[in-house]
Image 1 (cartoon, helix red, strand yellow):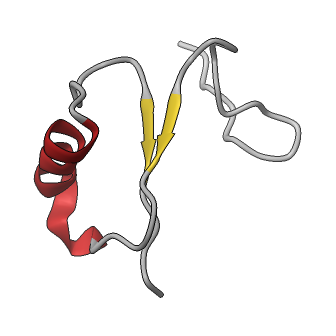
Image 2 (cartoon, rainbow, N blue to C red; image 1 turned 180 degrees about the vertical axis):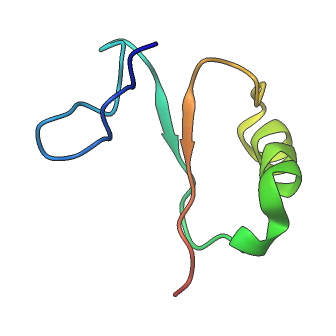
Image 3 (cartoon, rainbow, N blue to C red; image 1 turned 135 degrees about the horizontal axis):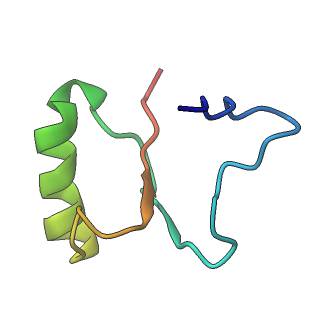
Length: 61
């Protein structure tokens, strides 16, 4: 099984150029873990956290 290359300056992050990326405005408490962040996606974005989209959250620090 071949290893996937890490994302970097020469490796694209998106596998599909039509893949959607959603950015959470403001700071997010990243201590919520994956379960808490998936609730944010469901309630604030009104999207399915298991969809083939990327959700980006930023920490306050």
